[in-house]
Length: 339
Image 1 (cartoon, rainbow, N blue to C red):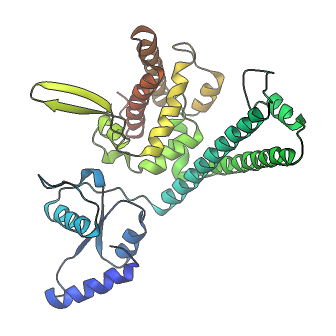
Image 2: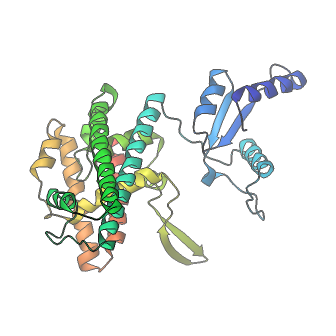
Image 3: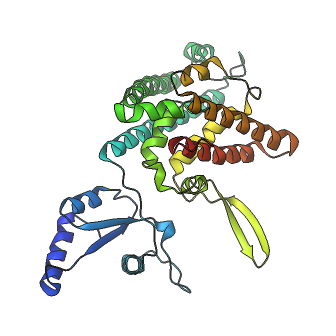
């Protein structure tokens, strides 16, 4: 239902006039732009409310889903009556606040990436191409950009691009330091340090996994957690035939992206090698935690190299497969299934 929660309360009062004060009312809405605000407002007024995961809502056979308010309301009512849905996990207010903060950081990362592309394109259009090293945005490359001399307003354009780059870079540094501070809070610190034992999982990724997932034990198995992230392959089955499809992507896109990025690290370095940086991150954790992470790191490196070098799979396919298995190991770590 749209609008302020007071409208829902007024409607329920009118219904109680007809059905009596002992009637139990259940409100529900699809997960979307309202997030958890309406849920918390109604719960605070002792109204039972559930948030339905859209991908789990059972559509009646023979009917196509049409996005209209009337059709949606009918479908939600039917799902609530027959329990043909899965509820969305409602995080704590602090988890939600940190989640929003980290996602804001990612928005700034995207803005910085776009400014970098725009700056390089601008220079190329005006005949300037950096040939100092093969990598852009190193300190040498930035110094080269600052020495360029253009005519008229073009110089002002380049200066503005570089000012935006400097502003976003300093802002990201400040935001990431704040995230490091948030990760040291009592309720997050231990679990963040556990997750940092995995290759490619640093503080920001670890904290994101914790606040975006909430209670890991609500997933009965590791594959269920991978499905929550949309990292499991789809399937097209007919009779005895089974056709594997690409991953469903029907899940938490933010975490899925972070784990695929983390999976890139498994395509670098020797199997069994542990860098000093990773060893430092693991320091202070129980031996069982470190041993479990080391086993996962070696297994996932082997998996990446086997898929790309032996089986000829594309790098992106291998990274996605590694990300899926990494998600399973994360679930095992957080539920203490170290076997």
